[in-house]
Every structure is written in C-alpha cells, then in structure tokens.
Amino acid sequence: MAQHILSSGKHGMTFQDFLSGTPAGDYVFQQVPYEEQVRQAGELIRDAEFILVGAGAGLSTAAGLVMGGSRFRENFKEFMEKYGGPYMQDMYSAGFYPFPSEEAKWGYWSKSGMVNRVLPGALPLYKDVYALVKGKPHFVLTTNVDHQFFLSGFQEENVFATQGDYGLIQCRKGCHPKTYDATEMFRQMDQARKDCLVPSYMVPKCPVCGGPMEMNLRCDRYFVEDDAWHEAQRRFGEALTECEGKRTVLLELGAGFNTPTIIRFPFEKLAREHRDMSLIRLNMDEAVVPESLGSHAVGINEDMGKSIRDILREVESNAE
Image (cartoon, rainbow, N blue to C red; front, side, top):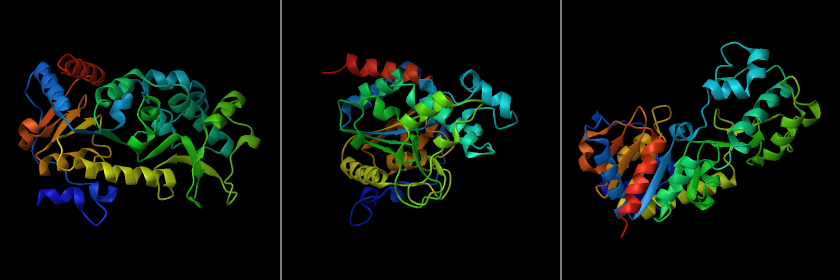
C-alpha cells in the first residue's frame, strides 16, 4: 500500500497530493547523545541515493536573518519612531501595518526587501547546507522567501520556493499570472526614501490593470503562482518520483509548527510509509520525531549552524 504514495495519479504525485495535515501521534525527544546523533545523520547522508531538503524559517533564523530583536531595531528605527504601536515589533508584524499610503507601504517594503533579499548575499550556513548535499542527487522544498538557496550554490531547477520571494512583486489583485523582479527598484527606493516614504513617481503600478502592486508573498488568495512557480512545482513532483525505491534522506531544516502541512507533516508521512526513507530533523526547539520511525529518524535539538557543520565534518571525514 505504501508504494502508491509517490505515484498517485497518471502523472505521479502532485504538490497537493504531497501536503498533509496529520501530525504524528508519537512524538519524542530522542535521548541519544548529540555526538551519536551526528554520527547517525552522517551515515544516513553518506548512504543516501537522494536527498530531499525541506527548509523552513528556522534555517534562515539560524543563518542570521532574524526578523526581530536588535536586527529589526537597527534597520527599522525610523519606522518604529514614526509608526510605533504593536505592529512595529519585528519585520513580520510590521508587514501587516495599515500604512496610510502607497508611498508609505513601499517605504517599508523596499527597506525590508533590501535587508532580507538584496544586501545579505549568500550566507555561510546556506553554503554549508549546499556543501552537505551537493555530492548527491537532491531537491529543495522551502517556505523561505529570502532567495538564499538560489544564492548559495543550488541550481534553480532543484529548488521549489512555495511561498514567494522578497525580490518579486505582483498585481495586488493577481489580475494576471506574472511576477516582476523588484530588486533594482528596491535599491532606487532605498536611496530616495525620506521620512519612511518613497516618492510618488516610484510607486509601482500594475502594467495590465493599472492598479497597485504587492509583494509576491503568499498571504491571501491573490498570491500569484507564475510560470516559474508552476515549473518548479512540476520538477518537485519529478523529484518525488525519482525518490521512489531509493535510499532517500528527508533533511528537514527549521520547519516548525507554523505551516507544518507543507514540510513537517508530509516528511513524517513519507518516512512512515517508505522504509527506504529516513528523516533527519534539525530544529533548535522542536526536533521531536515520531518514535515509531526508530532508527529511520534523527531529531537534533541543537543550534542548526553547529549541527550542519558537525554533520558535514562527519560525512567528509568518513567519505570513501
């Protein structure tokens, strides 16, 4: 019965087939010493014939793209002083602020785009993740919108970013299925912004309907899934098919319980129904794994940067 999960339908498994809303009923924090967990994870990766990476917000936080705290205060001091209130506590909450004008809205979002997409470049932790998997056939499914996988060595054809990208904009009402690269626009807005506002002439308008534009971030039913998104979804389906019958490592990085139906629960389902699939779950606070998976699961509750580096060293030191 398990063999059908990756081959549902005539054309293989779709992204919608993959999603799961059912958590495991037997979560445990493993009582295995950290060093032994690193050894087990390294062995699983060395023996893998395919690595499916699932990455959530915890990976980017561990890499340094923290949404709150001092990073928010240092970069958004003027916005905090101007708007205040409960929204201006972190970059996520600030995105929901009821900005009084398009000039104000793009004043904030251009700054956010600069801080989270344009300026950081490839971060060391993401490059370490690439070093860990690059020697094996692999594919990445991520809910992160900071473009880090594309910057850190991963090929575009091996990444499916389901929730959008900080560097893309779209029609607010999704009147046509296309997104637009806004990174250069953000640079120009960053130079021209005064008192948290961008000049009126810089406010983007939809080239089709003439209406306002929006960030290409999944937050409502108007999120645009353009041709590139659908192509990435198709390649993800192909990767799932490629996994079938192979020793596959499900390498889950920082996927918590915010949107668990996209990565966390589906990875558990795959590992539960395919004994040739093993789950490696790295998460600072939520590395519980299904007890029933036994040796097919490693849940490391440790700083992710340290864990990735230690596993990488384990893999490299024991490579044939």
